[in-house]
Amino acid sequence: MFKVFANSGWLFIDKFARLAIGLVIMAMIARHIGPEAFGIWSYAIALTTIGGGIAVLGLDKLLVKELVSHPERRDTLMATALLLRLATGSVICVLCVGMVMLYRGQPSLYVYCTLIGGLNVIMQSFDVFDYYYQSQHALQQVILPKVGVFLVFCLIKWIYILLDAPLLTFVWCSFAELVMMYAIIYAVYWRRYGLPLWKAFRLAEARYLLGQSWPLLFASLLILLYMKSDQLLLDTLGTPVVLGEYAAAARISEIWYAIPVVIATAMLPGLIAQRERDVQRYEQSVRRWMRLSWWCSFGVALLVTLIARPLIQLLYGIQYPQSALILSIHIWANIPVFLATAIMQCQVAEGAYKLNLYATFTGLLVNVAINIWLIPVMAGVGAAIGTLVSYVAVCTTLIVMDSGARARLLSWQLLAPQQLAADCKLLAASLRVFAGRYLSLSGKKTLAE
Image 1 (cartoon, rainbow, N blue to C red):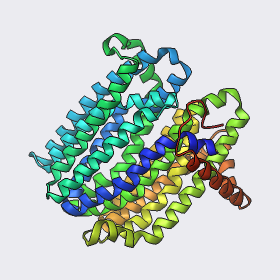
Image 2 (image 1 turned 90 degrees about the horizontal axis):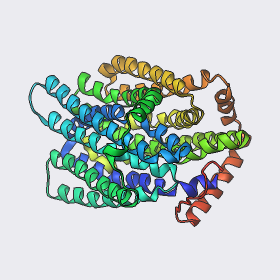
Image 3 (image 1 turned 60 degrees about the horizontal axis):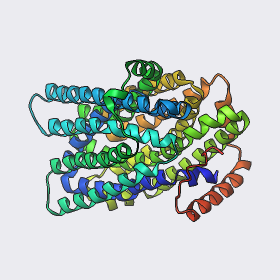
């Protein structure tokens, strides 16, 4: 287990820099601009995030798998994936802005925030370089520029808060941050490998990638829909102020989702390789991962519930009165999120993509139904309940529909009290090794070992 921490150290640096510093800066911005403006920005983020899910084309996990299995196709895979994402991102940007203009009727803060969010979607096409470095266990190549640029722009945003800047200034800062970050990452990759986009692009490769990725595309899109549909419905059925209060709480809760994403991202190449070499060790790694996910998510949910009210008052002040109650409900969605992320990543390693699609579709239906029912009555609290129930539905579907019954067996093992002491001891030892290595990442070790 300690190798998971040692090898994913750079990912933890990136995610937890955003967890600690990013949350504080965003809270300062939310206090500065107020719940109404924060709600408008959150609406634009939700809409363009859903559009961004389409622009990814399901290539994130698939590209890592292909680069691990077929390193000789690196140039064609990278160039083809990048151009596919740039083209799709441009279309998504236009569609999102067009939809908001039709709905709102005239240029407004909604339109401008959505336009900048759409430009962010285009810039995020350069995430394909992340996928390559994931496959090579060399994530420091992208994490260092990301963290460096992130810290610089945190300082810039803080200065703008002191200067009493309006909402759009902070929205443009988010775009400028992505431009600088991806420019550095692309320059480093191009200097080392070169990437002749038009020469390396292959139509046959594009057809292959899209043919393989469509279940992942729909699963990712559905995940984003049920993650963000609550915010779209809150703005539609409620007010920007209600959405702002909900978004303030959801940001604290959802930022913990970085933990399973970091572990899943770091473990995928090792799981793929290990499953091909030794199925027994692969199963052992999955069991450890599931137990870690359970205890970590339970601890986070319990802690945040206990400190929800003072935490909201400390970060956001008195302008967000309902956010504490919303947070104390929303945070418990972390448990099914952690478990579902682990199960889904294992299914990607095994090529079982369609089960992810079915489970995510179930979650979306449950989320939308509960939100339509509860938001008019309970506002943001109803949306938090809908989020929690929908994630439980996703996790339950993944467990029930697992044909090999492995997920059901693992879910029962999570509740075995005799595992608690052993898991806590293993986790403590892993953290000590992780700290002793200063969050270093070894390029020669696999995470699942």
